Image (cartoon, rainbow, N blue to C red):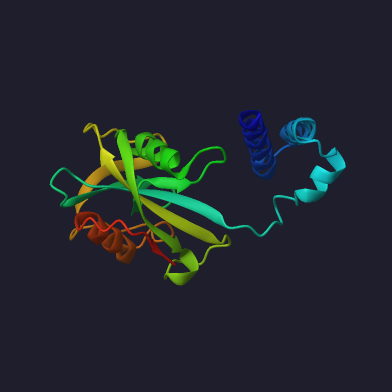
Length: 206
């Protein structure tokens, strides 16, 4: 029963996201219908009325919730280099990662993002940090974001850049390229790198 409910939540999240970004009435009508179906199914599973459920969920354009960004720290075998992906949005580099997906654990998101962006298979090992972007000198952004950095161990070696990035490479920790500072800062990479190489697995937060 919980698995079915999780799938319904995922359906609703996809419908809401689609509605938020759709650009024509045709798509808007269908995403609205998917949202209504998800609410109806949730009502059947949970026992709440559709009116109660609709009142519980504020419009996705207005609800002030924290967004979660999941990033992976992957080191070379000698632990002297860090795996980075070059973002297509600005041509700069970041730790592989992206927005957390509804229905996936942080561990699953980290492994998926590394695979999609760099072609490398990894095993997530430890949560190294949860950064509140407000507490670090990132460029201004409309969303309030928590950034999770997860140490991952590579189990393959063939780099293959993903369709949504420009490149993927390992870089020496003292020779990092220009970083996409909306996504990651050098100070943050330095912090999680030091934790990784010293086996300090007590997560930093804030």
